[in-house]
Length: 76
Image 1 (spheres, rainbow, N blue to C red):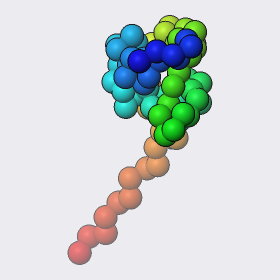
Image 2 (image 1 turned 135 degrees about the vertical axis):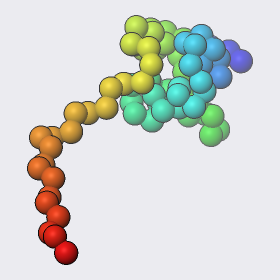
Image 3 (image 1 turned 180 degrees about the horizontal axis):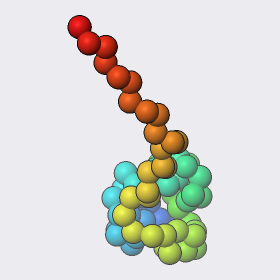
């Protein structure tokens, strides 16, 4: 589905090699601009370039703060 340079989230997912759900996550996080038309997100084809060079896979988890020492158990 393409109208005036816009594509659907399904088409965007196919072009980027990711799932439609991941495309929606990128939209919700603000990394991929999209317009909402009648409850359907539409993405400009030119905006796909904004995330094409993203690293593959999941982003790394944030490193935890310095580990706290384990508590010693009291002898019963």
